[in-house]
Length: 359
Image (cartoon, rainbow, N blue to C red):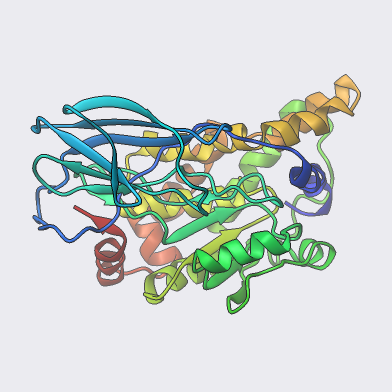
C-alpha cells in the first residue's frame, strides 16, 4: 500500500497509545529439559492457553491426551492442578514483564506458556509470533519472535521492557515515508533493519472510492507482498534473520501490525507446519487487538466514508487467502514459494523447524 491507501492505518496507529485493547490470547510451547521423540510428539498437550485479565488474574485451560494429571507452576510454585482436561483462574501473582506458567503433565514433555499479548504503553498489537501447535503435535516456541504495529510511540518504560525481553533485531517492513514520519524507537543494543515490503511498487497511489474497491485494493496488496520484488526481498531478510540468528529475539512490524506483518507471521507459521486454520485465526486476531483504535477512526468519519475505510482497517480471510493463492499461482506451491521466492532451501527449513519447534 502506498501513501493514500495507508492513510487509514497510519491514523489508526496514532491512536493506539491511548486506547486499551485486551483480548484473550492463546499461548504455547517452550523447550524444557525432557526427552524429545522425533516422528511422534513428546508433548501430550493438544490445547493449552493462558489468558490475562485486566484485574491481574490469569485463566489457564489445558487438554493433555493420555495423562491423568497436570500440574502448573508460576515462579516455581504450584498455582493449579487437575486432570487431563482442566481450567483454573490464578490470582495474586506479583507483577512481571511476562507471567510464565509451566504446564507439567503426568507423562511426557511440558510447556511453558504466557499470554500472547505483550502489554506496552505505545502499541496495541505487539504479541508473540509463536505459541501454536503444528500438524504433527510439536509446538512453536514463544519468546523467540515477536510481531507488532508501529514502534514510534514506545515509551521509556516500553523500551526498557523490550530490552529485558531480549529483543535483539527489529525488522521494519514499512515504506520510506512511514519510516521518515514515524521513526522507530528500538531498545538499546538492538539492530535495526529496513525490510521495505512495498519498495519499488508503483501501485496503490489513490484511495478507493467504494467498499468493493477497498477490498480489491487489500487483496491486490496481499498479492504484491508475495510476488512483488520488494516483498520477496523483505521477507527473505526476515526469514534469514530468524533462521541465522540463534541469539535472537527477533521483532518484525509495520504500521498497524496486520497486513505486511500478518503475512510475515502467516508465512513463518505455515513454514513451521502450523495448520492453516490456526494461521488464519492468528491473522484475524488483529481485528480484536486493534478494535478500539479502528472503532475510534471510523467513529469520526461520515458513514459513507467509514464504509470505504473499514476494509482498509480490517483483516479478512480473503486478504490472507489472496496471499496463499498468489504463492500457488506464481510458484506452484507454498514450499516452492519458500524456496524460489524467499531462497529458503530444504536444509534451512529443516534447521528453522529444529530451532523453533519443541516436542
